[in-house]
Image (cartoon, helix red, strand yellow):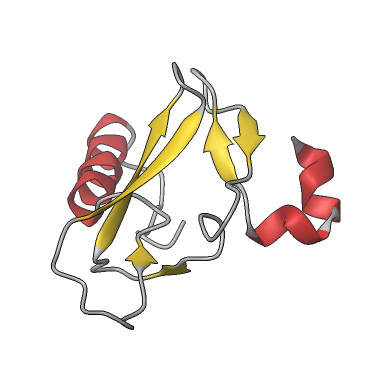
Length: 97
């Protein structure tokens, strides 16, 4: 996967695979949706069918931008940071890591 970081695709791929050690690029608009902390859509990696499904999680008006949270749900990120801190208090971590 590191080779993708040397290409223009660097900003347009999804982590992929059982171990999330592969990458995939969605066709159409799938890799062009912008990031938002509070998105109006979610993506689902369907490894069995080799698809990246995008579904609305809020009403999206005609002409409105579709946004995804690239980093997963904020609540899960907070739990991961807290768990890391409890298991290894000397580790400094932030939500921006």
